[in-house]
Length: 174
Ligand SMILES: CC(C)(COP(=O)(O)OP(=O)(O)OC[C@H]1O[C@@H](n2cnc3c(N)ncnc32)[C@H](O)[C@@H]1OP(=O)(O)O)[C@@H](O)C(=O)NCCC(=O)NCCS
Image (cartoon, rainbow, N blue to C red; front, side):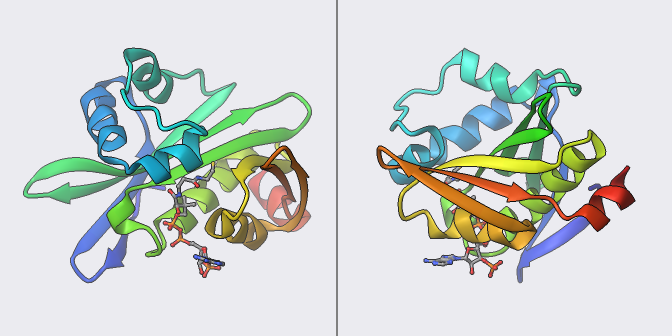
């Protein structure tokens, strides 16, 4: 984290932990997401972005939950273009969810976010990452499969995906 990454020819993205002062940036990001992207992330069209949702992404106890933002500078203003959250459970499982700006999808931002989240989760002792996906979410499935051996279970149109984090990397993270 901390380094910048080029995601297309003109934009550089930096990954960092979210902070309370990100409230308006998080709101602006969530409000620009298409209904399809919101549905895939929140399992609902979420027509309005409430204060509770904004706080979810800006206030967290790092022993229990981590929120990573992908931020880009546009005209001297920092803008959030991706958001990943992970809840660290005592079982060694870390529950992951990710969302990327519609205009920037398929350019590697999701890959950056999931790699950083996996590494942070491993540092906190996680052995597995879990995510809930709607059916046909091939990009998110591909991102999980990149991280390690992945198994999926389908129930009522939702797929639970669980990825075993590689042992060698876990040892390096410890
Ligand atoms: C899922 C999501 C976060 C991915 O972000 P992204 O920035 O587009 O992801 P990337 O560009 O880094 O990588 C996408 C991967 O999916 C693959 N992919 C894309 N479309 C695909 C398809 N139709 N079939 C198979 N793989 C596909 C890409 O090849 C890439 O894999 P690779 O790195 O092994 O080549 C983004 O699409 C999103 O915000 N979706 C809506 C929210 C969501 O579905 N969240 C997941 C539920 S928590």
